[in-house]
Image (cartoon, rainbow, N blue to C red; front, side):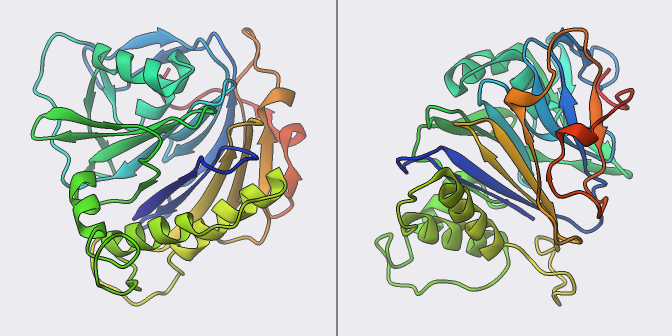
Length: 315
């Protein structure tokens, strides 16, 4: 239902792309969030409270949290669906819902290593969206090229940390995805490249083509490369499939972590928009600002189209 691809071994820029696939529109909205915002984990009694230390750009979903975010230091976090997730049992730690997980990370930390060291400070629980619990896992990357995948399995966190963990899809668990990958050509096995739209096949294709991207000469070529991989694993509207993990792609994002630029394309419009974090007013005291990425009049840098407004989640 979603795929994340991190190109961290090219000589130009650390870039990551992510698709969002789901049964229905997640009502995405782009936000510029300054330092100093008082936030909540939105998980009921015992919810975590914090003040954002870093400015960020985020994509909200269903007005319940930031499923994708990057801060002004080039640390990014993405929440993707994982049906196999089993969360930690209740304890005394403050609680956050998992759609606020990415925002909690980018509000607090500047590197993947620091984020992993700090994750145990809160307990994560699945958010309920439209009456359905949303199990998720977390991908992290930073401007140094470091990355990690965090999954809640069997009631405890399972962490894969290192620059080699560059692709994430949905079920099965990441460890099982790696075991399946080894069955295919170019990864030690004999099977040909799969062409289905299910998670396991998207994982293989993204991993394969990431290995074979030509070295970029410019940051634009680096972004185009990782975006092309995102499009390769995207699912068109109307694709005939009744399996749970095969829904259409509603949007594609790409982040240049080196230069701190966030790109977004809704699959229902032909336009690509972006926000340059270095040009945004993210100082403490500024207001949260947002823009509707479905607005067909938007194209290019939309920093001047952001409108101040009250956050409907996590406050």
